[in-house]
Length: 423
Image (cartoon, rainbow, N blue to C red; front, top):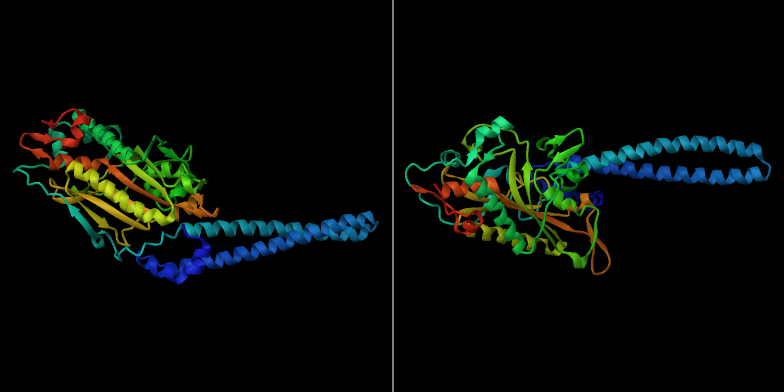
């Protein structure tokens, strides 16, 4: 989240940068600055009023002590009036501060200079591609047909229990899912990430801390009785573990990984692009989160990209990396790289990971700081990435590894699932 002083100092620069997002910041910035001016003026007037009231109170005591009750009573009436003025000013100050905070919550993160301009996903830049797309035999199927043929996933049963977008994994499908989770976590912990098990529900403060609220409120499942939200990703509870912290410079970087189910109320649509595992309301994901010193955060981002590359190389899945354009960039991100795996059964690319640097955007909301070598308090940079989201990885494995004899299992996963083919 931007701070008012940053907007004052970099107004024109930020307006130009936010144009990449197709976000018109001119009107919002003017309202922010006017609201802040009103807040400052109100605070100044309130301070002056309270000071005068305190001065009168001291004078009243002296007057009573000196037997000048009439003068003291006159001042008491003025003090009463000042208290009423103070009350009104306090209410105005509270309302103005709340309005200012609400305005700041509507402003997305400033995109990094590497972010290309653009309107939507069609304008994203392909920056890397690797892996050979397999040539499948005649009669190759998309994953939802393979899942039915080999009794791996029951989409209809999920509809019966809950509704569309809540599949039931069965037999070797469930074991393969479990194998992927264990494999991803092991890869992450071997790379230095500490594993956590975190709550799957978070409070409102956590949603605001990482930027899901108020921007994505409509996409989150909300338990209204307890005012808790089902998590859309492990990023939310993991990053919020550090909300309000003041860390020492020697504690950074902090590397975390967690497996959780994820819940998203994404708007539904029809067609092959959302069939099967392509878009779900509940799915499993392993996440990585980093808390970094600002000067190291983009080195860390490169390291996260390399880490996910290594996983996909071991799975031997064809993939590519996209640098998201301004129009497709998430609200909280300064720079994002998307990983996509090629789905041979559908003849298209499927997003399986996003790796993002949020710079100080989340840290400002979280009040997450560290004390540098000179003893000065500074905001950290936060980063996160999917490592990896399971549904489309599973879809890619089913489709890319299908043969006339059955679905082969990537060699690296065989020790985790205990079989090398599904037939």
